[in-house]
Length: 326
Image (cartoon, rainbow, N blue to C red; front, side):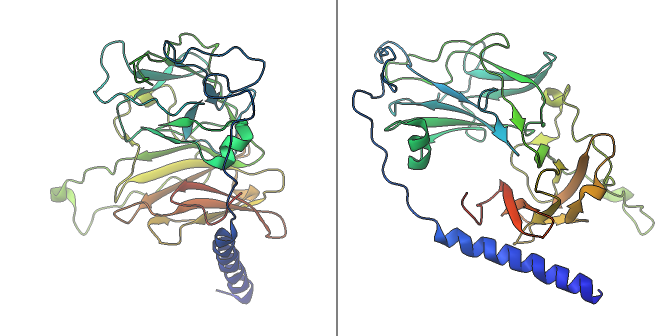
């Protein structure tokens, strides 16, 4: 490596070190409280109060056209201003407890079972999020996607009853058609269409000294996953294991002119870890990135975006904990 390459490598390491140090400087948000005249049944003044004994009450959906996700989105969220609800325990069946994700053409992409804890979780909304919502409490349901949202692609979600239940077993109403929930992800830079695929099974009888190893796709291959067949793709996994493959498209724009793979535990292998606009496909503007998990657990994995002066713009985490707080 020449002197210029060495200095560039050192600078990258310093950037990661500073990100890690900044993570310890995060402060604590003040505890959220309900404003006067509001509460779980009436989260905003001037709106009619819900009967929480006979209905689920208010619910906010994210992302949506009015509040799109920025730069990367691998989960859908439902926010409720009450904390006495729960997810179903039994495996959903028939017309109960399932959520469907479609693309804008009406093609089914994913089916999510609300009783599948690898994909659906419920937790108390963090205080900093509650302050943004102007709520004093509530829960959020996180729905993990097999394939993260594709930039500027149209989607819509349909839901069966039985995804969220009250103590009296009142559930969410069914949602049909594309009008109610249209998730969207946008941004001048970010990660599009991230997915994990099971490692192909190897026939050991075919492995020998003359075996030709298949090379990974080059940087200009942009087809991450056939969005029209994602529901039927048996190789897609929500949580990768050792040997599994990761695919994603990186896009650059605005202040972000360079993308660097962040993996401090070396739990993933990438043939290339730094990308610029020169690596983008001239027609799509996307940079296809592929790698493999080399550890038993994913560890921390993200993409650091830098400006033209190599200053930190943002880091988008695909797994693990962010070294910085936004």
